[in-house]
Length: 326
Image 1: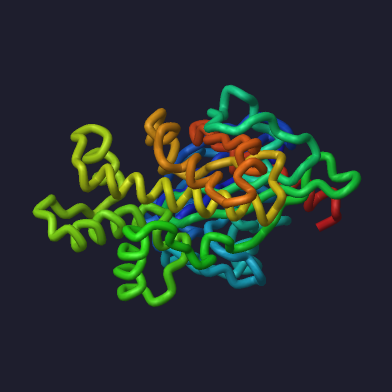
Image 2 (image 1 turned 60 degrees about the vertical axis):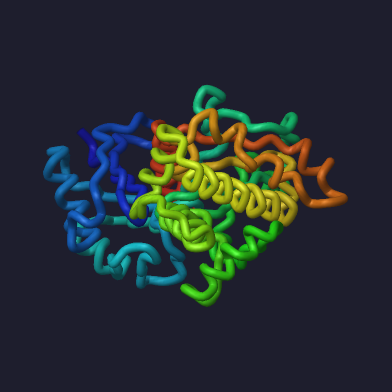
């Protein structure tokens, strides 16, 4: 067998790895490893290679949940940091490509088939128009695709839109954000729209209402309390979460002119199932005054994370780099 191409999608909690035998080939041995289980990214990759019993790769692409602006990579929501050149040497790679994880996911958007998407409102996407992408998980990833002349597959955006300031639109949201501001100072979109953010929203509501409801320490607990137990406080927290997400998504769609649609990735929203479709998300997405009709036409889709699309996006990053001679 030829030397495989190693692919990884590395979030703040888990990393997904797979390998391809050739460009455009299927993914093999897709596995999920907990980031906290390994002291370094090198140790995690080495454990994967040993477990999959494959030959040492000659090239690899990593999508990372943090900015990638130079040789040193430092994760925002995890303790790992590393030198790209040192990691390339340690793994014996001829080529290593490291991109933001949502940049990798954006590269995969043109590959997604309808069975991997669930539409939440809106009309029909306008071909050739910009596409927006965001997704809450351990953090809040933000990216998109633009289509300059000749770029049929789109050019991905690499930014840190999850850290823009979040805005309140209701008296309750003002009170909740006041509590978050006292704790964090700057309240970014990520502070409210991610796993830890959902927990913070729950506790802020608990503080405001002086409720005797139980404390929680994970987004899954809040979701379970809301959707399985019908807990009023958890439902209110989840509604706030979806409202803030809709507000941020609408801002992104307006900024990019995303008539090509808005894609929602990350691990949290897909777990909400059909409840998300009835949540405040869509109403808040469209609630932009005079531009409500503009946003009402834009389709939003929830991406099925089971297809590991970011791994295919990492593979595309390798292909693009190869075509550019990098």
